[in-house]
Amino acid sequence: MEPLIRLENVSFAYGKDDVLKDISLSVRRGEIVSLLGPNGCGKSTLIKVMLGMLSPHRGRVCYDGADVSDLSAKHLARQIAYVPQMHKSAFPYSVIDVALMGRIPHKTFFFKYSTQDLDIAYDALRRLSIRHLAERAYTEISGGERQLAIIARALAQGARTLIMDEPASGLDYGNQLRLLEQINELSRQGYTFIKSTHSPEHALWVADRAVLIKEGTVMADGKCDEVLNHENLLRLYNAQVDVVRVDGLFQVCVPRKLNNGCTGELLRTRNR
Image (cartoon, rainbow, N blue to C red; front, side, top):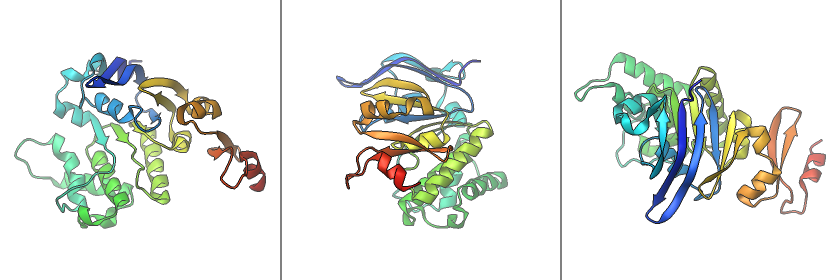
């Protein structure tokens, strides 16, 4: 089966600084792929190249068999929704207005939002448990709530592929879990997710694959429970971390040596 998104030997540089170096990867329809790597490794640039916001200096990006450079911005917006890192607005749009912006790719230049558009936008807010914020000004809610509003806008867009740059950034723990649950549920409905994250645990909990990026290259690519291990996390983050399975179900990351001198093994013993 043809992959939904395919990158072939993609390279990109800002001036003389190489950021992406000969990256090749593919994403299947309905897959959840997590991009992990230290700050400055090229994750955000890779996302912008996938979206067609940046053109690779070498190689190409294909979406559903077509070169992204040959597709119009409006066509791409109907297929792919982008969730950036923390977003700020100078205008006091209401939260429902922000969600409704996701319907713009489906409209002509002169348009009015329909009842169906409103229903779709309100449903997106409900899914993310922020329906009660609909009439609040976007500029007056918390950073985490603004992030959820932007994700609601992406859902309202109707695209079946969502590319998310650290979507859990700024969310409290409860909202992080609700977001992961929503991603998992939408994936079962055929939605495709590519998301960068600084949390290996988020990848272990919901992603099908993890792509580890270091210094602009793919260091490892595979099933999360195979590539997210002590050796790879040490190479990626220069941190001594064990990946521990809890009750035979969830996997969590445990520092080998904590500040109080405890080792990961001692921590596991304490929790038995």
